[in-house]
Each structure stands twice: as structure tokens, then as C-alpha cells.
Length: 274
Ligand code: C2E
Ligand code: CA
Ligand code: CA
Ligand code: CA
Image 1: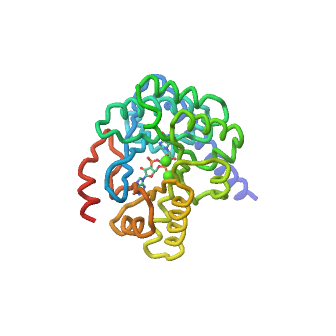
Image 2 (image 1 turned 135 degrees about the vertical axis):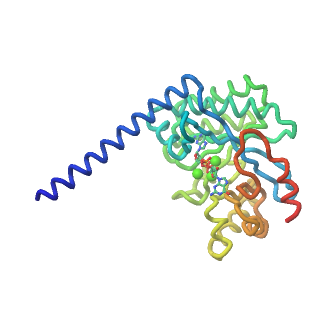
Image 3 (image 1 turned 90 degrees about the vertical axis):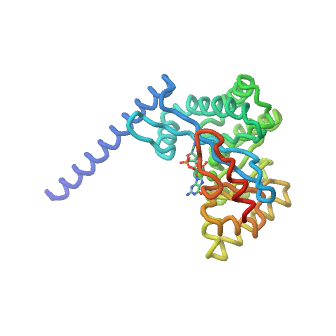
């Protein structure tokens, strides 16, 4: 019984320290957003598999809190839970559009939009403001959403995404295949792009079932007139697989890591060499 109590106490203490850690992270993120200090947007190239040209760059947020880099996988969920995601989202949208407006190659910029940014009527005005402020044409902006956004906010989310498309902004379905009902969402909204989660392409190299999934999604994309992007290309074999299975575009460390600006010139030579 004593041991049981002790265990319970340890558990509570652990939970408490985790909560405190979250609260501290939230406070530091709030301060970073207020002072716009330590927050950066990196860009990772997305390439046309046939020509090797950079069609777009994905904006990926980075945070250095003065001591270390904190991964978006750790702080984006905190921003979502605390409502800071709107401020963070606006920062990324504005920064990404301003940067893209200066790109000489005319590539588009792809910005991740969290499910929590949808369904509130704030996303469309934020996008319009980012375009106006930067002078970037709407046709050079893409937003990436996961199916969670559609699951959580249904009709309202679809109305907002439709409005973005009317403006000329492209909409991509991110992490395709990792959710519960990805196919159903293709019927409720006409996406411009489907991003096949990196796990499928990487596993496809030695798993026939994963290769079949990549091929089927690529085929689906062609039939629906939707561009398919294979994510998470880390090795030449992954690139060869994405090409064999018929994906239109590719993204991953092999083609270029996320970098502070568009330092991705040598990658065209890499694709050509394949
Ligand atoms: P995501 O949208 O699926 O972004 C792709 C993630 O995969 C990025 O991680 C990218 O750096 C990483 N990646 C790229 N190439 C490769 C590869 O070849 N292999 C592997 N293993 N990984 C690769 P990152 O930047 O750490 O972002 C993680 C997630 O955080 C993103 O997943 C996205 O869900 C979220 N996120 C990042 N930036 C933002 C943002 O500005 N707003 C919102 N709402 N979410 C963001
Ligand atoms: Ca994404
Ligand atoms: Ca993704
Ligand atoms: Ca993801």
C-alpha cells in the first residue's frame, strides 16, 4: 500500500513538472511573439520531378529561445492549445509572403495552417493582409492543411478554404494517408495538391504494399487533376521510387533541407544527375 502511494506521488510530481514546463514554454513563446525575437521562417524546396525546377518552397517555423533550438513539433502544439497559434500563424504568413515576393525564380511559397486557425473567420483576412502587405500575387501562395482541420471544423473550414481558392491561393492536403479518412476529404473539397506522407515513400523502397499506396495516390492525383508531392525524400532510392510510381513533385532532405533563405541552387544539378 505504501509503495502504491509512493507510486501515485511520483506520478503526480511528474505530471506537475510537465505542466510547469508547458506553462514556462507558453510564457517564453508569448514573449518571443510579442518581441518577435528568436522566431524564424526556414524554407525547404519542392521540386518538379520531371524538370528538377523548384515549384515552391515550404515555410517551416523555427524558434531559438536564446539557448537552444526548439522544434515546431514541440511548440506548435503548445501554441495551438494556448491560442497563440493565430499570432504565430500570422507571423509565418507575413514573413513567408514577404520573402517569396523577392524570389527571382517566381516559385510559390507553401505555408502550413493549423486546424486551430480554421473555422474562426480569421484566416482569410490574415491571408489577404499578408498578400497586400507583401505584394505577393495570390497565385504564388499555397496553404497546407491536414485533414484534422476538416474533421474539426467541417463546413466552416471548407467555406474558408473555398474563399482562399477564389482569391487564387492554392490549397494542399498535407500528410496524406496518415489520417483516418483522407479519401473522403477529396470529395468534400477540391484540393490543388496532395502531399503523400514521407513514411510511405521511404517504406516503399522495401515494401510492395507501401509502393502500391504511393502509386495509387499518384494515379488518383492524375485522374483528379491534382498535383501529388512525395514528401520525406532522403535518399536516391526514395527519389527513384517517387519517379517510378508517378509522383509529380518531390520534397525531402535529399533535395534540400529547410534553410534560412533560398540557398537551394545546387539541387537542380542533383536531380539532373539522377
Ligand atoms: P510538415 O508540415 O509535415 O512538415 C514537414 C516536416 O518534415 C518538417 O519538419 C521538415 O523539416 C521535415 N522533413 C523535410 N524533409 C524531410 C526528410 O527528408 N526526412 C524527414 N525525416 N523529415 C523531413 P519540421 O520543420 O520540424 O516541422 C514539423 C511539423 O511542424 C510540420 O510537419 C508541421 O506540421 C509543423 N509546422 C512547421 N512549421 C509550421 C508553421 O509555420 N505553422 C504550423 N501551423 N505548423 C508548422
Ligand atoms: Ca506541411
Ligand atoms: Ca507533411
Ligand atoms: Ca506532419
